[in-house]
Amino acid sequence: MKPELFSIGPFTVYSYGLMIAIGVIMAVVVAERRAPKYNLNGDHIFNIAIWGVVGGIIGSKVLYWIVELPAIIQDPSILLDIGNGFVIYGGILGGILAGFLYCRVKKLSFLQYFDLAMPSVALAQGFGRIGCFLAGCCYGRETDSWFHVVFTESHIAPNGVPLIPTQLISSAADFLHFFVLVWLAKRKKGDGQVAGFYLIFYSIGRSLIELLRDDPRGAVGGLSTSQFISLFILLAGVAIVVICGRRGKKAAAA
Image 1 (cartoon, helix red, strand yellow):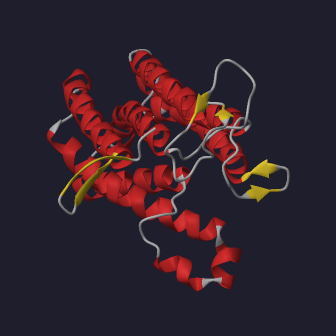
Image 2: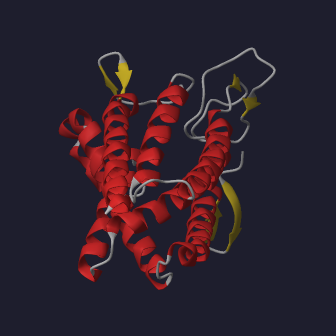
């Protein structure tokens, strides 16, 4: 529960940024080590990661602007705040699109690298949610349960109030997600299925954790913005798993 870890002169190390950096490094290292098992060139992993991070930042920012469009119309200065305001789903979609473009440019099999990358994405998200916990963002509802956290130095979450530790729950789920996807990668019936399962599991998990969160978020009808987007991500994931599975069976038969 410490947004700023330490400072050296004018340079400040923020816990959220540090955990994001650790997550990205771990994701790249794990993907590079797994690549030879699937006859993929690990040299492309770092480049895909760079493209994915840049695409993710752009995507998360653009989706934030879309979600906050009414507020931006009232106060256009929000557009000038580059350091704050991101939506994770925009980051996921932006990162996937960037990876797709890289594979097209390099004439690589996108689905194969898509499958390789998504378990690492889940791993990175696990570290990222620890960063959320340290910063106090994405906090949960008030609770009288023994399973709670009380923030004392957060500039975002309410301090001195017992809250559901949604960040830690999300982090544990993301790490579990990583291991499940790695296990599924050895049993997939066609290229693309691991990525499809990532979309399925993440959309379901995100929809459930939204029920426990209490930080300011957009809404679409009776759903939060993330829950609304999760419906389409879930359908896309199911479609990818089914279609890629059928293609895999046809290729094996041929």
